[in-house]
Length: 150
Image (cartoon, rainbow, N blue to C red; front, side, top):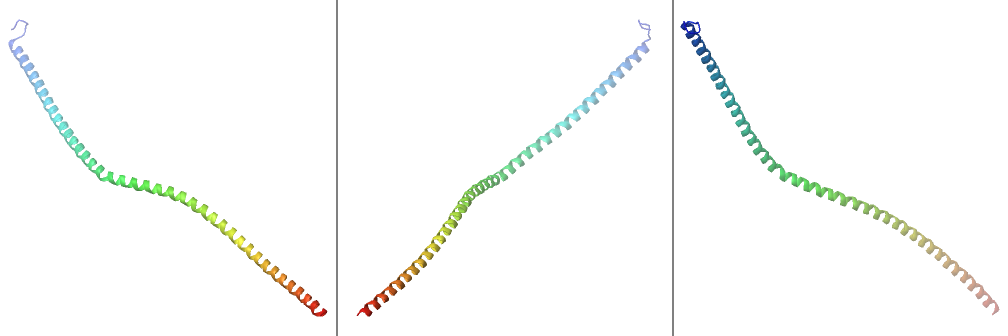
């Protein structure tokens, strides 16, 4: 028996149990560490793939931007020109309407004056005709008077 009242076989059993427990603990720790390393490697692998995909996507995005950017600029330039043309058309339409209105008013005034002139000309012709008739009548009367006195 040992000094603490146990037998040496108990001590060796206990020591074996302790060694076995430590060995089992170490085996579990190693297994945990191994699994941890496997998980870490898988995560790193997935991160590397994700980074590579991110780089590829960024590259594709840049290529798309290069492809669409000139079209956007051209479209924007054409749209701006269309807007300018619309503004010009709007002001020109207003000017056209104003000029058409002025033309119609001038044409109406011209027609009124032309009609007035035609009426005045007819009146003048009538007056001249009446005057001639009156003078002819007077001349005939004077001629009769002259002929009758002679």
